[in-house]
Length: 295
Image 1 (tube, rainbow, N blue to C red):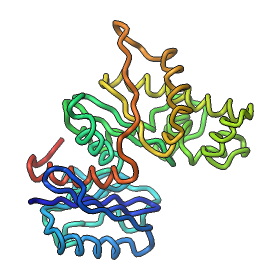
Image 2: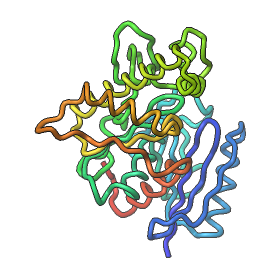
Image 3: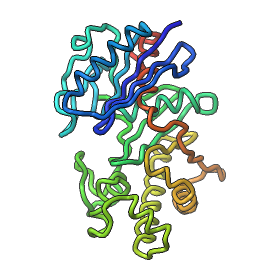
Image 4: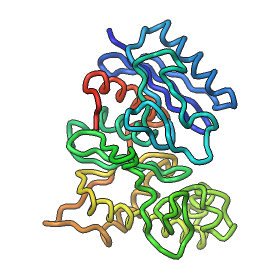
């Protein structure tokens, strides 16, 4: 049996998954990201390699990767030491492949939950910020400079706050947890507090939450026009709101989505939780061995 190892490096946690040749999870672990994260990963890889003899390793991390998918080459202000790290030399392994964390989550969702249904798919991660990924013709699309899928940086309003890509009033600004205090004029510390106020019937909280859902509907409608996906998958912490997210979102979609011939695009929740990035990284490593230079 062949085994593939995937690691998802986040600002808060590092997650590790081992898949067998049937894409089944046979081992997983999770631990906090600390200053010595490189040593922790080195130790994890060694333990997994000793136990499973893995054929390849996938690394998922925030930022842009190089064309060879073996290094992070652009990562503003996060995870000191990861940018430019040569993973193959660092770990002493030939089969190490790196990709953006949202791309990894997209690959996991598509390969494990949606491949049998769709050829074209978008994924949005709704958390601290808004990330994403694009599946075209059944393949992960990374694009020039591997930066395709940064869907959260789609601008919606010119006169509002900017994100790190200099996009004003972006989808990420309207939805991201990082901007909750600014969007609420200091009333709410995060999106969870806005959601709680919405659920309790507090007028300002309800106004803010519905504005978020309307912005999400406008953003998704624009992305549907650009990519023509067969479905849009939503992942991340904000989706834990469940019906409080999907019901108003779908109501707003009826106002903004262009539906040729009356056909709307389904918006569905992701199937995985915390370990999607690690699973996607392992799947990506597997595909790179089978199909080198995956687009």
